[in-house]
Length: 116
Image 1 (cartoon, one colour):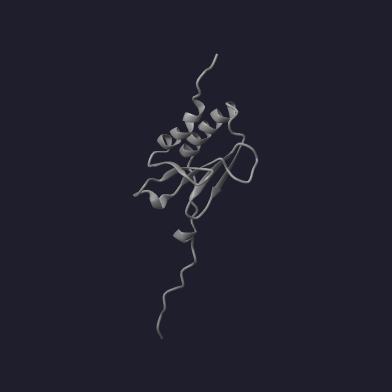
Image 2 (tube, one colour):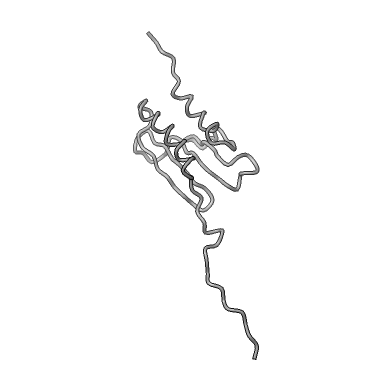
């Protein structure tokens, strides 16, 4: 009689894990979102936590296409950077390793010349 090892229980695989924003990242993103809402630029947002990417989408109106997407891609951590800001047309506006510096590209939209 031969003994066989027990069959392991199926657990969560690494491929099934979702990518999501942590509390500090959401705090930085929602801080910018609040300032842009107060300025009247943005009105709605959506969050998606997928297998390879987490997305915070910003809308000017409730529309089909987001105005901007703030993406977190852990696979790009050692290459171009973990975070990216993507425009409505798919153009990457900024990419980097630090979220606050990547979000500065959107904060420039708040600075407007004052006219008399």
